Image 1 (spheres, protein in one colour):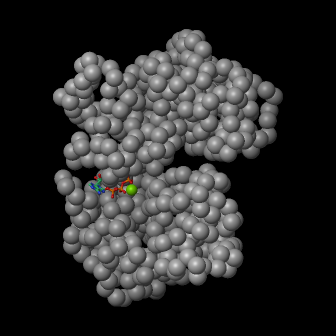
Image 2 (cartoon, rainbow, N blue to C red):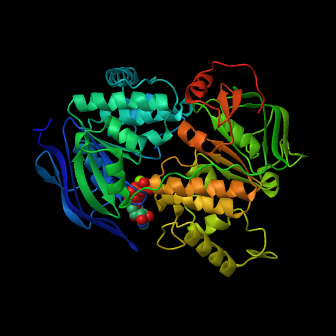
Image 3 (cartoon, rainbow, N blue to C red):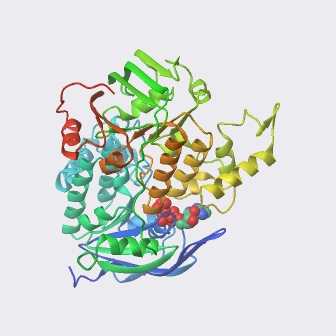
Length: 509
Ligand SMILES: Nc1ncnc2c1ncn2[C@@H]1O[C@H](COP(=O)(O)OP(=O)(O)OP(=O)(O)O)[C@@H](O)[C@H]1O
Ligand SMILES: [Mg+2]
């Protein structure tokens, strides 16, 4: 692999947006047969660089060379023609269409010429040879997030992509799915593809990458071979300073019961039982972590607590008040904040500006509202305060939030939710997609809220994170709480067994 020539090379790429130089003379090259990780903190310019390589953005300066030839990319179509394909952070599939239909979507062939059985066969063959388990006939809305990602990958392979770019692919995957994805990436590299893998996670880089390029503040810090580096050194390259040790959980006094669920049952979107009699309690000043492989009812649990999903049976109490099947608005008014899994779907409105998103939940209350009127000045001051206090990097307050980087989106969401001084915070995968620095910020914010007396329901797949932050850990499996352990006693193996459905004697949360 060492002697392989570069399959793709980007030379001195510069790209500015109003108020920010996202890429500053960045050079980057990937070889056939390698997995090349692109590493960097939130806002370092990774997505921008790769959007240039896929023809989504035009660079202000610099050139792109594919297989020895200088090329101009005017659109994603041009990129595909040159064998470059990207799997984005937000998928672009059409839910009512089948997998095979999605794979051929946007290809030039007129529809009546399409031989669906033939296409389905080809899709199946591709999935098979790369270990991408997915049924070509199934409709996309029925798929899990991990399966949808596989469809996106098949789609690129179907179009003949030799250079495959994945933007934080593991941020939405379970540990199991992540392992499968890595095998797929390895197979692709083995077949002579160049695989470019954007991530923040150092242990993934160490596991799967052959080489690593680090970006910081829009510039390339350098490219290293995996065998010549280690996590500490990569972290230093990324952040430009030593990383302080993670904050530690502190025991505070517990207060009144804030959240209480009694034998709650709820259905999934597919109409199947998703919560099968969940009971749990969280007190003021307590953080309960929910561990488990995603898809075992965690999402539904968060939605039931925030009023977004109906309860079929059982009761939901907040501060002793029965709020079963009350509206999200009533639940917000009872002091519940929500950091949802799907930041750009449920959490924030993509096309609205930062300011509008900040006031989304409180435009009915003073000082933002004065009678029937909206006080623009108060709204602006409030947004400015939040952006400053939570260090959201944004050029101006009317910027549509869909243009913020992943980490900045999450900061903005947390800023809004935490600043409401809630009694209960429901945080669903709150550090997904975040870099080391931003993760540290979010963890500190949650612990501060806990110390202030908030009850916190933390849903995460990262056991280290859960053990680190939680007072107690509840493990979910197939819609049930398998067991609850004080995190000081909880051992990884024990939680792992509960996550796999090996129930120990019943305990109540
Ligand atoms: N279309 C755009 N308009 C304005 N600014 C943008 C746009 N796209 C990106 N930016 C800004 O450019 C900088 C680099 O963003 P980019 O999305 O490339 O970072 P990233 O390394 O992918 O971050 P993350 O890890 O959070 O996804 C950020 O400051 C971001 O806010
Ligand atoms: Mg990005």
